[in-house]
Length: 330
Image 1 (cartoon, one colour):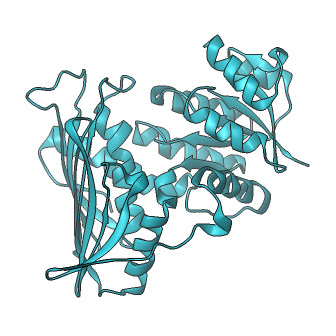
Image 2 (cartoon, one colour):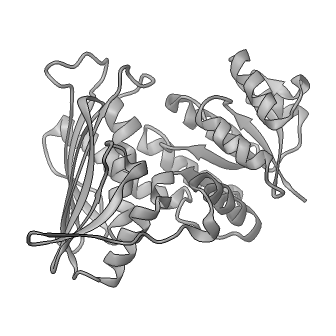
């Protein structure tokens, strides 16, 4: 039997997941939830669902439809309430990144899911980017020797603030880059020093610039700097290893079109990128992992518990900003 899903949020990224699941034999979307009628109409067009399967609240949808799972793709401040509501109803939950904007909310959700015996998945799709997966493989195999330190810079010229939240850039953009750092480097974070502030010329309601330095359990380290109020687009991610540096570089400033190179002295050499499993897109891999968690009980890399380290690091950056100290995350 197909996994029946209720989709909370029918906008933007929500339609990516809805499209994949509507085309899959593994899933059967049964209802849409959104307060925006235009978004609901677009969701119905994509999924083939009728107006009788459109609702303004999750409670209404759950009351009218049997389902196994709830997919949450809403403004970030609404993630935790919808996760809690779905878990309380005994449903598996897939939630769009970031997981939550509060560490306590994320830890509670993981504990509740495990207590209820249901699955929780966070759609950190950059973990599935073939460039970063290839970097991780080379680090695990120590192709270029053990890693010593990493630097990531991500400048994004966004023309408007994100949905309102504390430390806006950190929780809604920086969280993705920090997750990429943590997922790519096969080490465990132990201490974090961070700074989340507004640029002198910035005008967002909460900070749009973040710095973070992460110390790992083997004394290697990584530094991230990023802003969403940049005047240009830039992305590069370099990991210095004992014998050479491996780097992801982008011609447009986005991680999605990054390529991989090896640097040694003055020489720069292109490095082949591993193919994704079965040629699947990142969104297809996400839906596949969610199905494997539900049907087989697999512990995939996108499980809620496997996302807690990222949330702890992001929370530590916010704490470090407020306290002016290094924060232990071990």
